[in-house]
Image 1: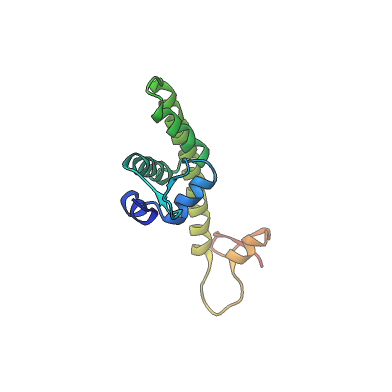
Image 2 (image 1 turned 90 degrees about the vertical axis):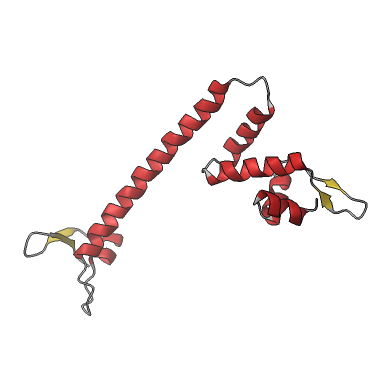
Length: 143
């Protein structure tokens, strides 16, 4: 099948297929006499594998390692599990960081009057201004 058909069958865009070939994540496709790329079902399965790994947030390096493990029928599943467990820890750290961002922005948005006045605690926070207390005790940064 050609690159468009491989793209449709795998869910990986033609542009990404070319990129993955360029960086060596997947082997370059065979070529026709007219120099068109040709993919077989095994190559499409590898593309599906890459797409799924990338959708789960694995880096290109981790995806390459997983591809090698997948191809190695003598592999130890413990190595695969270690990669997955390490990735879960990375995802949990990122989730915690993002939750902290959500909490901070929620607090700042709640502190902002959102009216015609120029004072904005969101901009004050981004500018690193010191915190001052509003009447009523809620913290607000000055602009």
